[in-house]
Image (cartoon, rainbow, N blue to C red; front, side, top):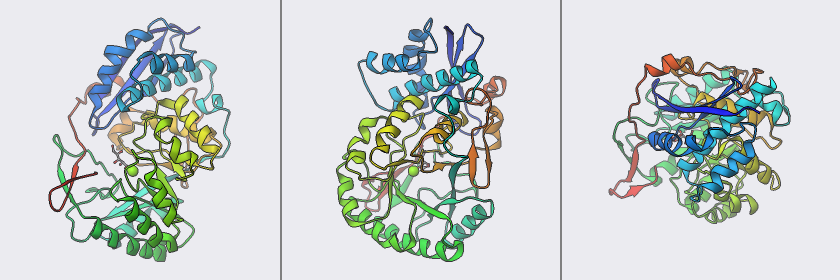
Length: 403
Ligand code: CS2
Ligand code: MG
């Protein structure tokens, strides 16, 4: 058996912060797992270094399920983003090890490919509707079959999802949170014309997505969903905060626009009611924040019973290791829907050389044994951790709002 001999956490900042767990075995095989929690990175690094790594030494690296249960049940304190990101990092690294020892890409261990490639969606955005539509046309020309549309809101200085740079969107933008102003009224007026213009320019053979980023009340979300129905959105994401899962009943009663939620979920319990009452169509939980490949498969298996498909989060704060793990999962899971793909910068890709590839709107994890991602530790060491926070959001009267 491959015995775990050592493990360490690597924190690096090639343009943005990433936390990586590296587990080594006496077989000379090592595995990598992403442990990045945007804006709270060092808490997961400490959780791993101070509390998890000492418990791993000497264990059989092949016992993935048992180690998952050991870390989840054994801590007594269950769930939460820090705990679940740490467990995810261990789990991901162990799948990487198992694949390398077997000489197989991880998707083969998960049952093999059940599709030829993974449909991904890209992010088109702009300050105005015209700019966003123009940007979306570029994505369409590059072969994307699914495109997310986010546009500036007239009367608001800035909004979620609109980048300063044309192709790279990085929300964690300052060493203390910047403050944004928000108006749901202004926003609600701006989205239907965006979709109208986008359909005119892009036609109907492309999926169009939109992220509300938790900013509406359920009844407002119901109205937006209804207003967008003529443009057939692929999904409306994070329409309203989901701590109270029953809130989605109200949205569902008012619209047939498909709903996606869950990038901040970290366990099956965060979406149990949403799935079992069929209040959503896509579950956005992903490898790093929802307990690794092992737990994500459990969520997907449960979702499959209710015709809910997967749509893993894939923003730039999820490292290439998470991206690779998600692609192995996506390729092998029966109820796959779509995968988010926000390209990393060249600096990040150089630190994490990887086997996954993009062509014609589809991605593939590649056939290297394990996950097919490396970390260049010398290069990683050159980029020191730099505190960076997501912005906060206030209404125009100064009240705190959901970002
Ligand atoms: C997002 C993210 O990709 C998305 O849909 O909502 O950009 C999200 O804001 C960040 O991942 C937060 O860390
Ligand atoms: Mg989102």
